[in-house]
Length: 259
Image (cartoon, rainbow, N blue to C red; front, side):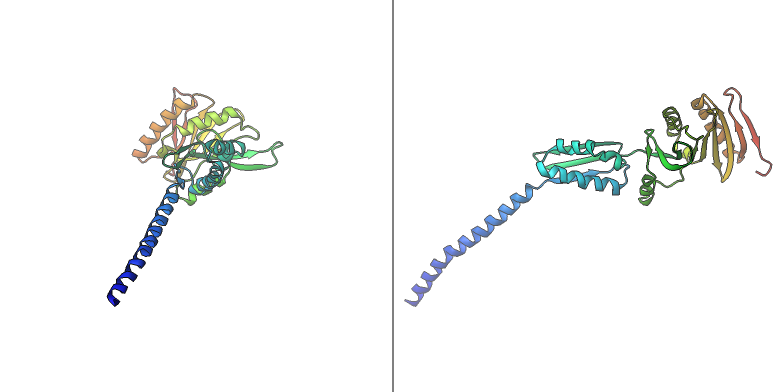
């Protein structure tokens, strides 16, 4: 009788245990489903400083999570000018509703030069960074890039007469400098436009200055000749003090006795 009673107790308890095990397993399954429903995010920074792009991503994620709408995200970017505030030159936002996957892709421009901008009257000025799409960025952009080691050489200065930073000059200078090989661009110390719109370039060759007079026109053609001259002189270990290219058909090179 005692054995039969024990068996009876076991039979009575067993269904309860099975029920508990089923409930736990069901609970785990439910949690797994909820986890799969969460949206996953991925960001491709490109050449952008991760600090700026990361801050932008957080803002866009909050906007997306409200209604799960890409339209809301893109509207916020345009309305609040978030691309300009975070130094973004181009962006893509894609969402895969099946995989619940949101992907942000950013690209940022390459910094070319530091520019001193004078306000009306020429009494006050501020510094900006000219980038490869011809726009002027806040100097913070350079700081962020250097902090993350995405800019490891000195930017040349662009010197202009007061009030001469017009769109045409910006475009011409941007095209000229962005078209240079990065190895040559690193040799630039200063780019000067005078009152007659004549271009002068100061190069730093083996830590020695070399002045290049480019005149008012044919800059692209003269730049091709200049690159060949500099390459030849460096191979010969001779640093010219002056290179005169004002006449594209005639090149005059002068050396300083000290070098």
